[in-house]
Length: 248
Image: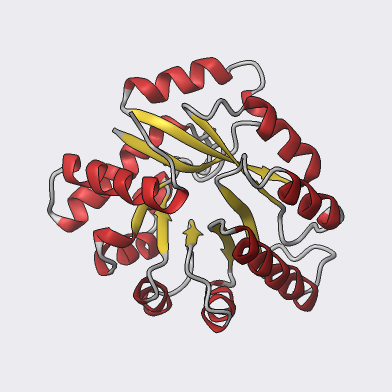
């Protein structure tokens, strides 16, 4: 039994195959999906497809495109009893686009304050900005954090783990020495499974699917020399705790 803590089921690539994609994931043991909205319109779709038994919603916005920031914040406030997290939000120093770092950081702090007020966890995007995202989170004493597909140094990841933060591991771990190092060094208590579907596939030119979190689990098992069943059990427990969901 596994939980995909971060995917994008509203992506256009799944428009005609969503039921099939979910069915395939269930066949390999995925029992729940947390699908994250990217901006206002996408977050509306996330709320529409969520059934609160298998698919759970999170609302966020990409740090490099904050045009609908106020609309997204308003949507989060109005649906705070329906969503399981705020995210993904954070920093992106790789694809900055038209949004400079200072603007990104200001928006990130705004989401941090909102998450604290609504008592919701944050799912954090930190591409090429892991050190800085963690610094802001720790300085603001944030407690409920999932670092999604963290690409920073292991030493910084360890500082986050010391604060109780979770790090979700995508199937691209099979081709990422950095993510393999993170898994080796962090305790299982701080790990989760994510697909980030349709991105971060095991093979870079393929469309990723939630069923591939089985690959994440197998790599964690291999790197930590523990049974896959133990990885599934603990990551499911971790996900259920941080997102306050019950998987039957």
